[in-house]
Length: 302
Image (cartoon, rainbow, N blue to C red; front, side):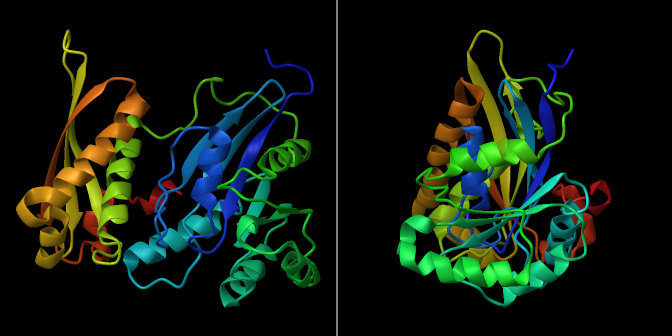
């Protein structure tokens, strides 16, 4: 039975690539469920993070950054981002204080004008700019769209994040607890493990391997009595040269990816992990619909 006055609802986080959406989501939820990278286009699927307290339950949907698509995967990501606007109780339009206002923001504002959902403007990365530079930026956005709230934050430092959560709760309708209080995402364990591996590959290879990486979990096995979870995963790339970079000299890069991913996976699962990684080449997979479906990018689910 739900408590009287309890609030609940769905909140989409939208914005250009690399404005800090995943950092914000991880900060609010308090546990890593969305992968973070300083490269754009890290998030590919909607990631639902569930925030629950005594007063409310907020289900966050972290969308792929809105951008001009360059391949079928990009088309998919754009559809996911824009469809999210029509499904929710509130939209957080997140922008980067450092980068100001540009064509990407103008494009998103035009999309926002097509929906009736209330929109908060969330100006992130305020720790990187002088406070005097914020006011002209806020005034510019105010002139372009009737935002329900404008909230400057630093997702990385945590500045103003609690205040933003309180303002979100005030805007949500009364409703039920959709998820148990200890559940933080609706994604299966396997998805999060694959994302953690992909994050480490992106971090460590930097500019050498663009976002042509997918990760497929082939096996997760808990052996009774050992206390160890055995995981086998394949990192998919598009070219032989990328395979060489991921493996590295004498396998050092792949080993480093595995060690860093294993630490996060052990924290997620609360047990020791044996992680086995392989690398395979599947040429031009981002433009092949059958392979996109195999890797979990299913447009019909959105």
